[in-house]
Length: 135
Image (cartoon, rainbow, N blue to C red; front, top):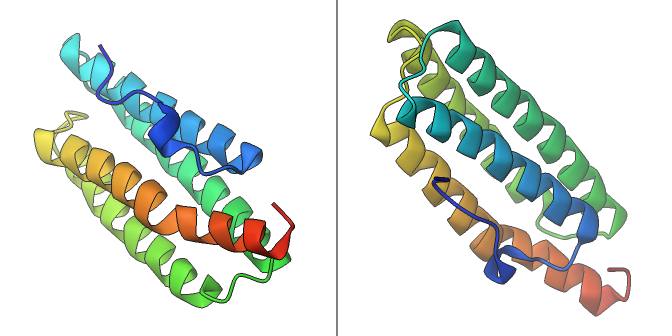
């Protein structure tokens, strides 16, 4: 059972970014399902590393999109991404130190991050793009 499922409340109106958000959710759910099935070790560490890679790629794509649409808060958003990656790295290191066993704090971080970032932050660049007629 996934920790989080995609629904209309996460749709920001930018197809490419929605797809990438769904990919992040899928990677997150794979880790959650693995933990629920008692999987740990290198398999989980690999899943966490993949999630990190997906996030790095997504952030780069998202920043390029914001630049393309002339989003005025781009620099602030870049700083948020850097902070999120830093926090993610800390969790990934803790999971690795625990033998590939993620804890509930990691999943809470991911769920809160995804929900609040998409609904509260990402939606703003989407609204800006629509207002500019470039969405």
